[in-house]
Image 1: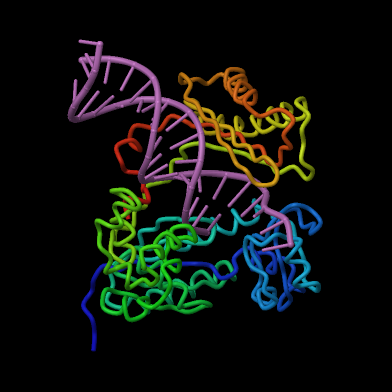
Image 2: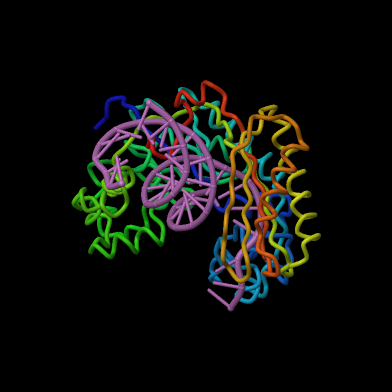
Length: 359
DNA sequence: TCTGGGGTCCTAGGACCC
DNA sequence: TCTGGGGTCCTAGGACCC
């Protein structure tokens, strides 16, 4: 029973990527609960980036405050985040994917990518990817196989760890239909709650929902898009156009909330310097600045404004300091973020850059 | 239990113009 | 004096992802 060659989308996802990279360079950690987050100090304000499977058995997961994670898994080894190490490992994985015969590769993050390919046996192709990645990087990955990007992405969960799973129009509802809407890529806790307000709890209910109801609730673009997600429909095109960043931002959470004006200004200047370093490295002019503040305990405000295109650092810094003036005095500040928007190159403006709405 | 840091995209509403 | 309709740009905020 052979299938004819057709176009497939594969979603490659490294298993416990960050923890796996750490274990590779410290083999004595293999088989132990490992948690990576912040500066590796569980007394600081920080969250878990990745936990090894052994740590997950204690109920530790990504996004959890490090302090809580340490309490749940007292035996766990807690390590600081080492971004350059993960970037280097990621680059090798992506190069391996690009070297697969006939592969088009769209990178989604440090540890995942879409691979587009024409083949009559996508499972065999997926296993070849897994073998190549393992041989070259000693890292394990899972592969979702689909006839659309959304189906491939959702399939990966069923293949974890180290396996493959195929999700197509044929078995989508059978496999996903009874799952909660929040299982979908792009539906989080807030949207799933609003959907529940319309009696839509499962993927199948979303797939069959009234589009006008969704449009009224979420707008003309997002409403129909959510229903399409429920059906697993959408684009099948893996786009390998190089990513062009819209901007760069830096933010810090203060270990103690601060009030002092001078301290706040200094923090803004420090963040601005880092952002400018990123921008200068790209050689693109700044066309807007933004400030994000979080007052204790958790109220977030953002201020943005456009500026005339400029390469001048002093101009950018003074525009950022103007936004700093809008921070309420005497209110404890927990987080400060600075962002610079860059001019987009012409070809990106033409719509070649992959966007979420393009799915 | 107490919530990081890096991003992207969408929507609402106001200002402004014709 | 009171007022339509369409369009664009900008800002603030919300939501999502890894």
